[in-house]
Length: 71
Image 1 (cartoon, one colour):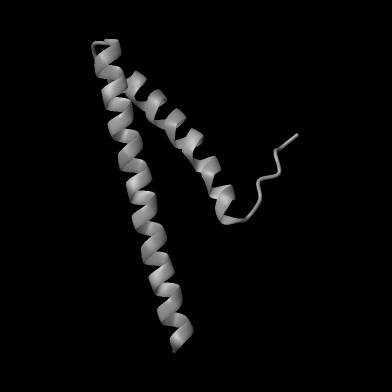
Image 2 (cartoon, helix red, strand yellow):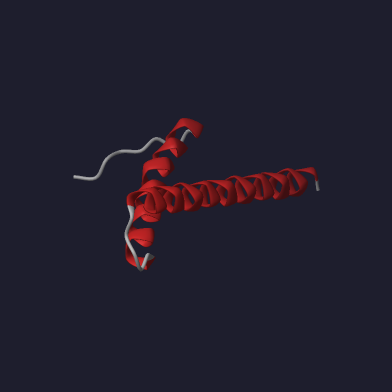
């Protein structure tokens, strides 16, 4: 049964574990030589990049929505 995720700002916190899982699986597939320190560093870097771009997109959409509301 699917989990009921609220549509509140707090509900967006569910994106964090999903992004971490995506980053770990992607790096586990892409790394040629698996070493724990390298893997952890690469996963954290990709995780931060994904979250950073999600924040940038959210800010851009918020700006567009505010500009459209003023018109």
